[in-house]
Image (cartoon, rainbow, N blue to C red):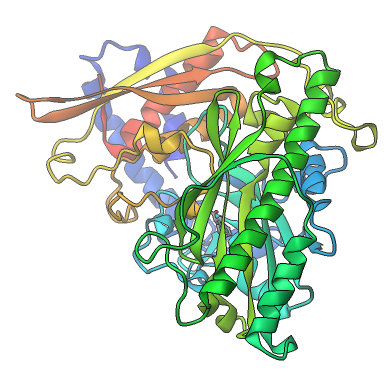
Length: 506
Ligand code: PHE
């Protein structure tokens, strides 16, 4: 791959004045060609957890991802993600908790089984890690819904697992994170009439714990255009009570989590004035292919609304596909990192992956929650990379640059889909996408990069070309990096951008 070409160019290339670089560029192009040849002789398969998968033009899983595959942080004893998972599970009693489903799933499981349309942007190679055209690393835990409903071993279940998305680089995004899916269904055929089933759900609702949380829920439970009820499957009364049951259950879970966070904060003496504000949540109308009506829950935390989870009334077609046509119910999906970061005061998502004892030994599930105590702060090393996109790329209107707006939310959103993006097949025409830069930087700097953001974007009218400038903050959580080390990594990033996307460094 281009990796080979990278190391074959002298490290001094980027130290040359820019006027001289074009002279060498042709030489590097030759090496790129040679490297394509070496790709042809590279193994035609990917091996993941001792299983071989044939590669094809869809394959885009980098080695950096494979090396982290299967770490199962959410089940590692005393790991903050595992403690968070258990705390949430404790609020779903009588549920079955699934925690060991492997991350390789079919495209069918991840998208089709949930009713994702063929052109859904979540399917793009820019957003999703494909093993090959039929197989991928799950982008969300919903990928297992149909199978779990089909097996039908419990009315209620949760499923926690690692999920994979090509995404931004910053302190709250990492290409692997953990989600918990949860669902509860009732079997109409167990009741004499549909009304009796509705009544049973109401009884169950009446037994849910009450809370004193401030809840903003300004919209009607369903709305014909914005958030429809599944009229051909559910009565208005069924939809109402399932929605009420869902919302109350999740509000209770949030109260538990945030009360625990507040206690830990008080115990550490860090109980700032803002944490004394009453806990508040709000329900926002949403869209997911596999639920309707759907919502996102946001929590008011230190002056901002945080998206915490997505949920809704399960699409009946999905339950029919799972051969459970008589079951009706709700489902939710949440990101464990975001909650764990709040719960423990963990400031950087990379810390979850740390093998450093100074991090790991701070957490002990027997001893109750304790706030994370930062053990070091090493200096950041910012470096900018400014480049012209290849001529004509912007004229075709095809170049995809993810808006920084869209990349700032770490919510467990519709499986990586940003609805406004066109679908681009980078297998035949490598067009620059911001996520490609993110991946190049991650592959080269590993966990030594903290943040990558667009700081300048303009079109030179006369030249008719578009220029982008990104600021890359290199910083290790574990040690101070030397300037030479950072420069070396940054040169490699620049070089790979040129080789892979034909950009011209300014
Ligand atoms: N799978 C959704 C996501 O990752 C979250 C979700 C799960 C929404 C279950 C509704 C029901 O964005």
